[in-house]
Image (cartoon, rainbow, N blue to C red; front, top):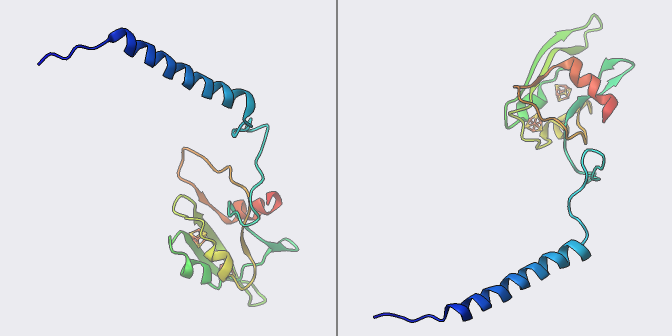
Length: 147
Ligand code: SF4
Ligand code: SF4
C-alpha cells in the first residue's frame, strides 16, 4: 500500500528542529562558561591526593632509601627493580633503582609501604612519550626538585 507524505510539511518541521538546535548551540556559546582551558598556558589545579611522577627523597645529597625491598614487594605491577649494595657504614643503599613507568598504575602503595619516606609520588603529570620509559635512580632523585 502506498503511503502519501506531505513533504513540504515535514521539511517545515525539520527546519524548526534545526533552529531549535542552533538556539541551544548559541546559548552555550554565549552564556556558558568554557570547560576547556588553553593548555599549556593555563593549568588546572590538581587535588592534593593526585598521584603523578615518582621521585626519591634525599638527605644531604644521599638518598633516603635503604634498599629494604618493601616497595618492590608490595608493587602490584611489579615495576620496581632494585639492586641493593652496602656502604662502609653497613647501611644498605640502592645501587640500582628503576621504575618501569609504563607498567605502573599509580596506586601509591610503594609510597605507603616505605618506612624511610624515600619514595614519593609527585603532582607531575606530564609524562607522555613515544618511548618505553624506565626511570633510573639519578632521574628519580632529580625529580624531587620538581615535585
Ligand atoms: S605506584 Fe603502585 S604500581 Fe606504581 S610503582 Fe608504586 S606500587 Fe608500583
Ligand atoms: S624506597 Fe623505601 S620501601 Fe623502597 S626499598 Fe627504599 S626504603 Fe625500602
